[in-house]
Image (cartoon, rainbow, N blue to C red; front, side):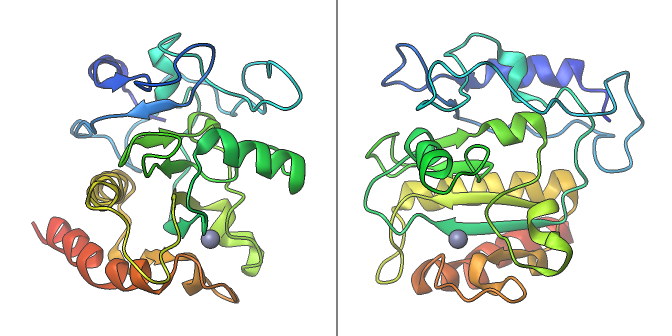
Length: 238
Ligand SMILES: [Zn+2]
């Protein structure tokens, strides 16, 4: 648990709702990432927050809609109101679709796959349903809930302790857009620093033990193994 009130206030100022579609529901869009304050991290002292996370969020507006966060309804929703998970991995995915976003993936995960809600913690848009490079923060992140994006690993380790980031697009033949890559870099570097996750634990989905998937596509996988890992390593050598 973290003492984070001051940081939270600063963080809230940096969060804006989606610039489009902000009528009755949207995922919160992260437009900037603040530096974690000194003292935050896995060894930070406990604050007076509940020991257990909520198991559900706001009431869905209909069965077809996800648990979603209202535009600017409560900036405090960004920060988990419960003990933060000691995340060990960052697992990067592609959607293998040309279009998409957190809300439509959420519907897919609920209605087709019969999962509890959007399986990823974050979705990085490509301009189809959210802005190119926008980082959509899913409900799981607010609740610090295990992921539903990397099943089948021993002890379900990569779901239990893996932060799932999905980039919208199919990256077998080409890279994500420059804005998507910039967003991925910013988000991964932030999370790696906050949870002390080394480059060897920042992986494409197909690198997870036992995985037999092409996700996140050859091109994005190569980018993760070269550019992104170098960035993380450079951050951590300072
Ligand atoms: Zn995947």
